Image 1 (tube, rainbow, N blue to C red):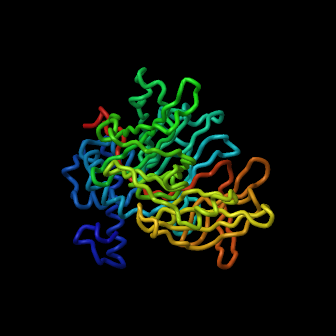
Image 2: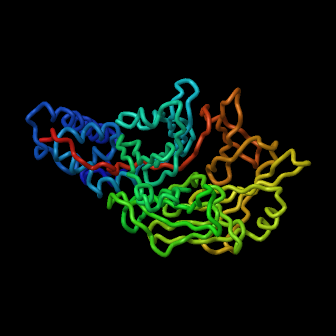
Image 3: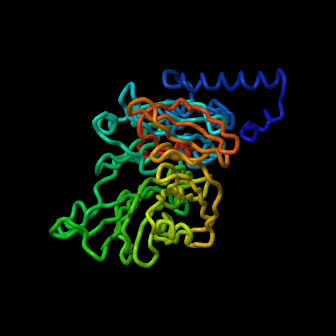
Length: 421
């Protein structure tokens, strides 16, 4: 953070350092008081103001945006947002249903220690909180990338920034509002970030059903994409994924979000990975390793997708012990579309069948496991397979989902308050 101190303050120590931080505290107090005083932003050194703002937590910045137009313009500017994002700590975000409040909540865990540093109800302080967080409704995280969380409840999708308490309902897609397309039904949704255009996108795959309410064979699907920057949906003509989506769990642990992947199956490749490139808006097919395909054909294994660090990972679970146990083989993909780039990284288990399930990874090969507690409760624990050490992460609820998260001040609904002066 020293690089963001004013030039005259760098390299200070002792009494000088105390003086600098007292000055920063003074500036913060000045900023907070501006809404009730005649003090002008021009009276304060801009370099010191920006340096101070970069150090403040998101909650304080959210309040300061309502002080005056000058502060609003600084805090919501793209350079300020980018610098602050790069200098803030990363977190592990866990979404679960709290057993005490029965609310859908998220907890942020420090990426260095895995201690819980913050917990809040989903969509707290937004008008959408009641509609998405009621205990009788199932709320899932579709994806989390670049500081924004995509939530789903039935057919309602919401983009939410936990740092700014900003949220936006995604409008219905082209197919849902078109009577001529009534036989197409949404099957799966993917969420990600397009770094080339600095845009958040959702991709929706529609599948054709017949009069008997069964999917038409061979599989017929069409694709539409929603752009947050454009604020609308568009069809992608000529892109027809001819495969059956087997599972569409959000790619847990994803921090970049440029790719969204599903496990799919067709006659050409059998079970394989289909990924959507958010920047180029194309699908990329990646076959699984031959040994996994061979085992899968015997029906004694299961596969699921997640992320290991920044790489797409495959949890290949093989039954053993007369179908009483499962061993988790973790494979990591080096390059999308290249079958030979899969690497068998390590093995976890064996565990009792239908017992613990892997929710993510931490610090290279340490594993985040979901285990059953009492009743319907699930606990999240950290396991180091090399030394068989277990740590309770103090997350107790139901259906936990785990993602990498980095705080971002990006505006989803970027409309400034009308009372700014």
